[in-house]
Image (cartoon, rainbow, N blue to C red; front, side, top):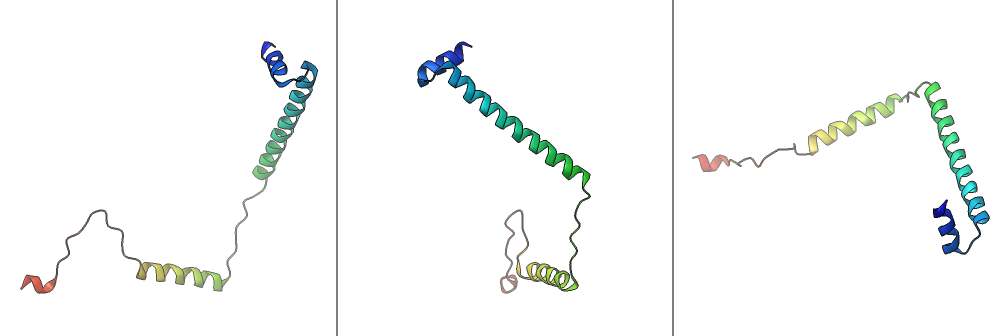
Length: 89
C-alpha cells in the first residue's frame, strides 16, 4: 500500500483517485485478456482455410519459380576458384 500512497503524493492525486484509475486500467486489461482468449478459442474450433488456386495462378507461380531458378546464381558456401579454359593450355 505504501507504493500507492507514494504515487498519490508524487502525482498530486488523492489515494481514492489513484485507486479509481488503477481499477479502471485493471478492468480494461481483463477485458482485453478475455477477448484474446475468446478469439483463440474461436480460431481453434474453426477448420483451417485452404486457399484454392486457379489453374492460371498455379501456372504463374510455376513460371515464377522457373524464372527464378534459371536467372539466380546458386548459393555457394565458399569462394570457388574460377577456371578459365584458355589458362589450362
